[in-house]
Image 1 (cartoon, rainbow over the protein chains, first blue to last red):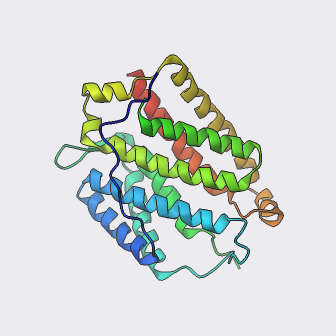
Image 2: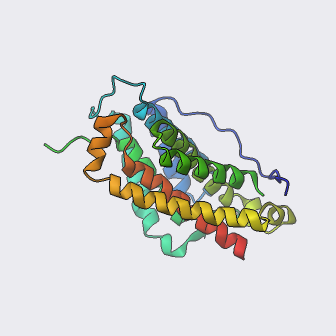
Length: 133
Length: 128
């Protein structure tokens, strides 16, 4: 069976480069989430996820010999993590409803998947955790 | 089949294979693609056109029997990989770090869990 190219292609989103970008993206995600604008929320989730995946790739690269295992957390990450934790806490309370329509009724949010992605983001941005004293 | 699902299936297979070969560099590479794929597919699921049942969408979700079986097999392999990784996520993780890689199995588990959940949703949609 031939591959059917979807008519709803993913739009290109600009790549997040700095810790500051990550923080502002998390702010936009919170706003979109609160406004139930799932299309916009999804854009920000994709951008954050790609950034986090690349962050781990760089950190875990065997070529990276000067890796700092337990460094200080950048301030912008602290803000971004707080935003993601807030969303995760809220989304977890809504998983029973599974999906929710956007305010204008045109898009949906599947909370089960969102929770998993947010959990990944929270862990990836925190990684590596500081060892307990 | 929808291109995003096809890509997602491909990433999952490559991740499982890399894990079985203990090729951690490849595991990291494919885990990154997989979680990005999860986010992209989640985004796709949220789009208005996707939420509606237009003929185009119905076509995008048509799978041959072989493709459907493939999807089930991949999901099963991911479950198995997740269980094995869970055994590595305790003290053995320290050994992993000391040996050759800084990969944290706990994060790969989170990624696989997200993928499994998404597979369940796709399968449910296909079964409708």
